[in-house]
Amino acid sequence: MIHKRIVTSFIATLALSLSAVSVFATADEAAKQKGLDISKEAKARDAGWVDGTADMLMILRNKQGQESTREIKTKTLEVLDDGDKSLTVFNKPRDVKGTAFLSFSHPVGNDDQWLYLPALKRVKRISSRNKSGPFMGSEFSFEDLSSFEIEKYTYNYLGDETVDGLDSFMVEQFPVDENSGYTRRIVWIDKAEYRLLKITFYDRKNSLLKTLTYQGYNQYINKHWRPDSALMINHQSGKSTELKWTNYAFKTGLQDDDFNRNTLKRVR
Image 1: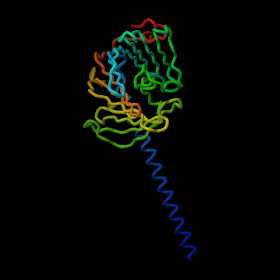
Image 2: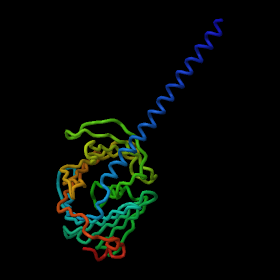
Image 3: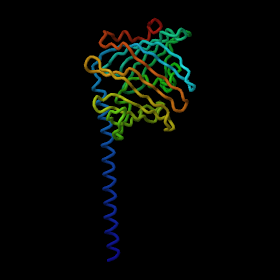
Image 4: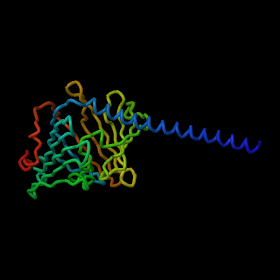
């Protein structure tokens, strides 16, 4: 009789354990799905801008707070069946004038990126293995300059948090690409407009590497939100890079031919 009670008790405990595992597995899958759904919604809400231009200041600060500033012109093209295309041209100061960076993002596979360096008078292709390297001495990597594509990550919903007084979702994103410089990143997206407010980046050792925050959002053509500034802080080096945008314009008539690596040497 005692043996029978022990067996019965064991079976009941096992059933409860299996039930708990099932509940946790279901909750885990739900968190993954919610993280994916939030990211899809943020992407979908910004669709339809077609193309855009802007002027940008890049302010580099070292650990001691010393600054250097670069004047940049950006052009972007929305590609509905692929990742977006972007062209970044440096106008000042003189030592970087004429430097141009062209990026073709892709949802699946490696992005295509080229950098024209006028001092060398040649176009350098950025390999996928070098995508985690710094872009023009800034705290942004080449990887950071690609457009956000859903397929580049897997997802996990972490909960809600208030950022700058705005109720926000916290979504963990894990890069699919094995050449990524990050093990994961956490993004904060505001619930009202699905704008990206903050990103924390974790390096290959899963240590906090950088934090990117966006400020001063304004709405353009009654739909698309764009920030006035962004600040990337490198917690490991003490350096930072600030970006400031002005003169946003959309649907300007840019075409695929305006994003051509063969003309990088001549862009202005």
